[in-house]
Image (cartoon, rainbow, N blue to C red):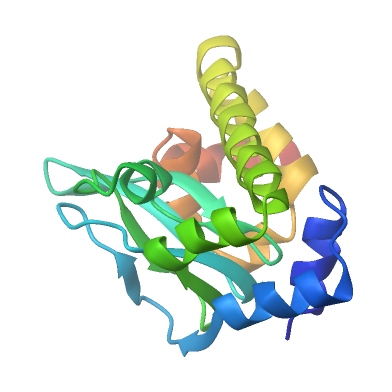
Length: 190
């Protein structure tokens, strides 16, 4: 259960076996069904999730329409990070796309880990940096790339998600309509 977790964090920080045991005790294992809301818009994100198995999407709601901001996959931390860090109401919803197995830590336990294991501060910073980099890449793609270029990049980097994620969610993430995405896919297949 913690194999992917330890593999992920070892890329950033080296923990001793004793520190790994402290980490494992701070997280709880949870299984949730598909379409389960982990965080809802308007509510405070009290937990941070490490995805052992499954997919989670972060989305915004505007005029009744769900707009996907990010798709989290296995071996990534997922959260409405802004809300979690500030302990303020979220402007996003975090919902499972598939049945998920998650390692879960609440805000207070995370703060205790920062005090108990100073290396966790480095870990937290690295997760925040990765979220920032991902956000910058998404923003740059919306500014610099055509819808077809965005689709091509998504297919090259996350092609397996085309088989796991409903296409209307991917289209929303790419900032295009499902019909436009279908046309792009058809053009690229020809």
